[in-house]
Length: 207
Image (tube, rainbow, N blue to C red):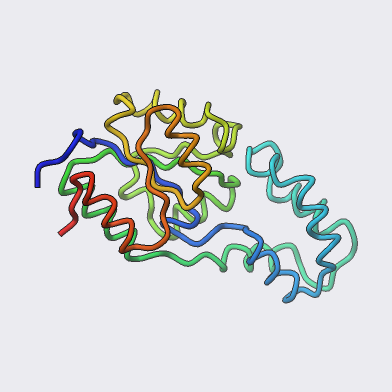
């Protein structure tokens, strides 16, 4: 099939597209239950820090100092970190599909994500995302988060391709809409099959 509009570049989210969310509400609730924390206090303290944490302005240890270890606990910092990191699971279908498309169509693959530094680097290493992603525009590296338009502009500047050659896959519709304002085509990811179908409509047929 001949590609329509010559898509040359994929912008991708990580959490909710390639992997499960890094430290989302469901995982935080699981941690609260496992470590017998006060949910209301935990979420209040998390709310104060999570933007700074994802923008790389607060380290994981600083986050934990203020959200968890502001009082004595019957578990260690390392135990809590290991649990946080253990929660991530891959979407093997999506990862395989992106790898196939990159090879078949010689696509640039660029991650645009809201991720905290330590979690981001752990997930990249564990699931070998750097073997097929060309570069990462992660909030913790660039000091800004989606839906700030500047993070998409930074990714555009780095990609050095016109916006009409890009398709952006994210599980958050609002983020896709913000990127669309810059001329970037978007797909709201719900599941593997619907995303494959949307890509095929853009001329990017996997099989």
